[in-house]
Length: 307
Image (cartoon, rainbow, N blue to C red):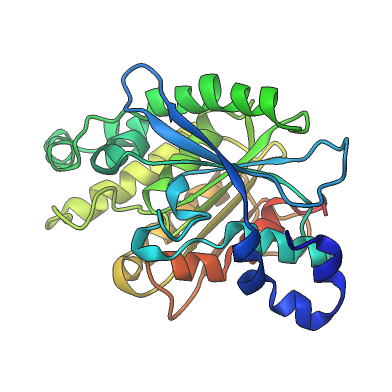
């Protein structure tokens, strides 16, 4: 195992941490966790090496767990470099040691598990029906959130040294929508959400929104945030997007979401006291490498004050 002390040895060691640490990453796999109405899925759990003995650690829960740690299971063989990012942040003093749980998706049922039911209910009926048919819906977001709340979180707290208090949740694309939904629906469990390349158009690549449907989707987003998110109340929210691939479509939707956040009393992109970040990353796309490249910024904001 590569120790934290070794990473601290020099700036060169810190710069090389992601490449070096990959060989030493070890995680536990809890196989075939299930809940009513859902397919079973794995949960991979990583605890940083050299975590202080007897100390409880904050919890980060992430979607699409097969893409986080292990190239063999990751989409396209590229991971999010989650463990490497945290180890480097620990060495630099910008991130605390934390436990990461990656909940796998279920392939063809991913869209239905992640898409928020309340957001879908705000779409015009024909559009919702078309998306449901193409995505394998209707939404199972309540069952998925129940899996996290009633199966995954209790298992983690019983098995690992999880600190008391609320967890952080994060994901990309449809996982961004699922993370925001969790922050809305279960503020008793989640104190912060990281939503990378949030897939505001609801479904892609087909069927893409047709003429006149984009305003309807934007109105649904605005109403969903206005009615369900509420004031910050100590919570934190990270939102971002690139401008390549699928991400090239997100900026107008993100502008609608930002306006709704402001109306709900959230402050962002300022100095000090900000509740949320909304950022664009030009030149980046809709892929694991792009998300991994900005993950340190995301985690630093979500865990601000805990390092």
